[in-house]
Length: 226
Image (tube, rainbow, N blue to C red; front, side, top):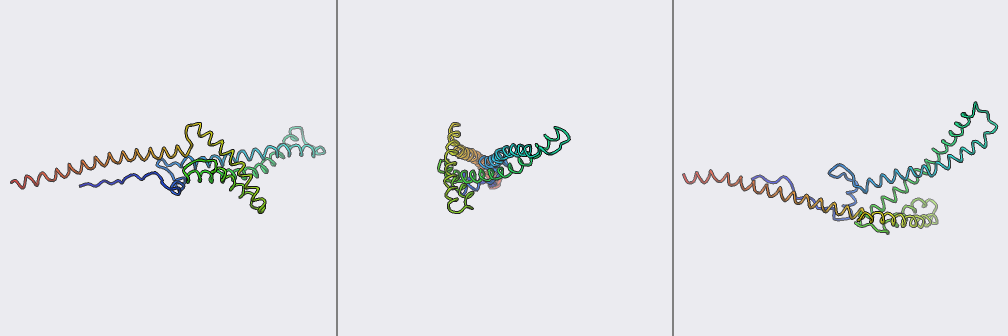
């Protein structure tokens, strides 16, 4: 008889390492998990915020410095003078904005990778996950200053991670469940749906096997009677 060409659906990830490895795999719809996309989006947002934070003050300062130091210079007209001042400010905006941009982006990325990894591995979202992520990120950024810098970065990162994590948890709780709780629920519902579909197809296959066996047995019975 025909044998089913499909197996029992795999259960949701059970261990922390299985859940972690799933973060970097495409799902059935060829999409990365929401946690992974949040890390990418937050890195981009951090880069933009860092660029604005570092670039705008540098732009204004460079423009003022150019105006203050260019009283003796000759310009073709007022528009030429204004453009020259803006070009000086733009150079500072790009230069100092970039310095802040990549630092903020790296800080936010490390923080989110660690906090998300801990939440996924432990299968729960807690303040301690964000505090640990902030402490580790701060220590990494200040470790080049020696033990004193390492300790200062540890404290600074923890001080940032706790309120940031608390705010994020509150926002998620307002929706009724945290991101990790929703992911666990969706995994369970998807597995149950796949299991029902598999059991349904398996029942149909068993019926077809029985019908085929009965069909093959009928000619043999008639031949035996003759």
